[in-house]
Image 1: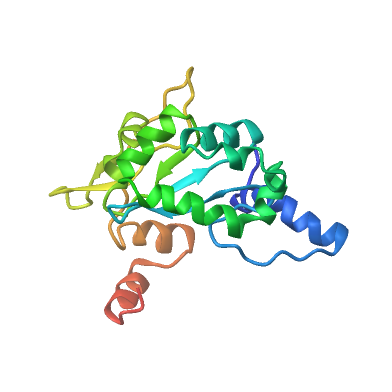
Image 2: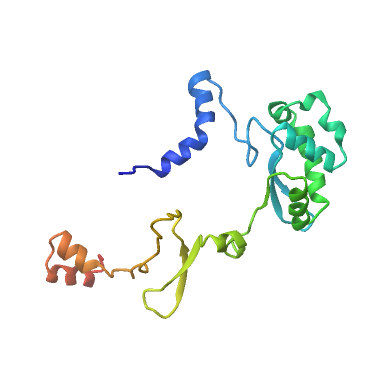
Length: 204
């Protein structure tokens, strides 16, 4: 048996911050999209009005970024000697990164990030996610028939891959009330007359 919970995933991501409080009594304030203890890492707005996430973390990535934007003076500045120091001086560094991003379109930033290279990604609008090449390649979203069979609906795909046991969605989601008789008369012990009465009274 494999047992897990979505709450476990959330706690895992937040464990360092929770531990700071439980162990050392240090309470962190909310920082938006910025990641604590490192930087610069944030969402930045591009020239064409889109948003990109940059994670310029570790000294090697920081130095490559500074060299690419022709600001090697930043790489040698003792104030910015490691991730924590850059986090502490984020009010100095963030405007520099923000100005660099704002001078380019989102696609230009992504292209530049690939050359440097640094971790970077476009912050998609709701209307864009389904068309991302990687989302399509991994079948993260898939279409299933609607309950009436007259159309199809986009739903989440199977989130895990098993090489020895290929997985697939075998049926669509049920229509509202489709399994009422099975549940009420089968699992809950109501008779057919009770079910009709509950439906007529608008209870179910």
